[in-house]
Image 1 (cartoon, rainbow, N blue to C red):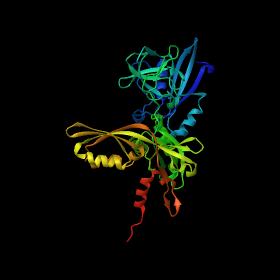
Image 2 (cartoon, rainbow, N blue to C red):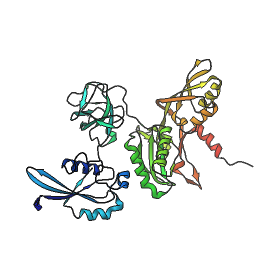
Image 3 (cartoon, rainbow, N blue to C red):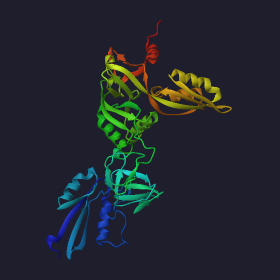
Image 4 (cartoon, rainbow, N blue to C red):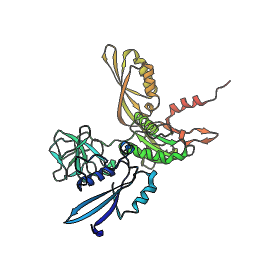
Length: 420
């Protein structure tokens, strides 16, 4: 009979799918309670529904004996259910325990890396070039396609580096990782911090779903460091978020993921771009939300982002494409023929002119045959004003836009009542 002083009654606490049953399996295996022939995954989960869903539904208990420093201990592990629906059973099971093992499935940011020179091993101290922060390599994996642990990665190899980086913004796509003890002299070429160019407000149609929207956006940001999020309040739409995107495709994908993956019904405000405002006092401010634009008397100039856009189109549609680009305040840079019936048109174009119906329009006028690509060029001064939409003589901030004066006139004509 074992002395009561050498008896330990304990439980394991963890979120669902965080490794509670796996840890229990390893303890049973380590103490020799079952031999390898009898072992199987989730050995304590006897119900088929438990094995199917990977959760513990029914409380289980197992006695294990283990000798430590020559002393025999009796370990009674009570494997409690792992879902909130069974919280009463959990509380009663825990009352029989003197302690608990709390399992936390936090590995931090997983960095997919390619080794260009030398090697990297577990335990190495590494330095992130962009922010000069240092970390210790805790694990290295290769994908086969499932993660498989390795002791080192060598020049030319690709794998996953794990070093408990808690914030995804601490290591960015394209960043350089080097050894602290023997650092590279300079970062690999080509890295730049990605900056959003398109902004829009996202609001829940049901104000009670604000927290769900917040949770969804935060989860998306965990693997998308280019997504910018900040809280915003609209007089007409209530509380929501002002989000920054790399472009319209990025915005549309984010919208669809919020709707499909998180079951949210949302409203997205008119998109805008990031403007730079030179104030009369000499300072420069960035404005992505029209409501933040300073009063006219404090504005010296407004600069808007321009992109260099390349359009490849069948030659028969050159006239239509050129007309569209001119209407969108474009400046022609080049026109060349790639073949007898295919042309390349290069224009300098305000980014704001590409974020609404530009894609659909260019596809329509070329019957779907044209393709285009653009990259950021520079900020240029433009004759821009803030257009405010009134409903019942009340300004609706969600509909406000920063527009070119010529665009404003054309837009206002569309809003004029039809004369009989």
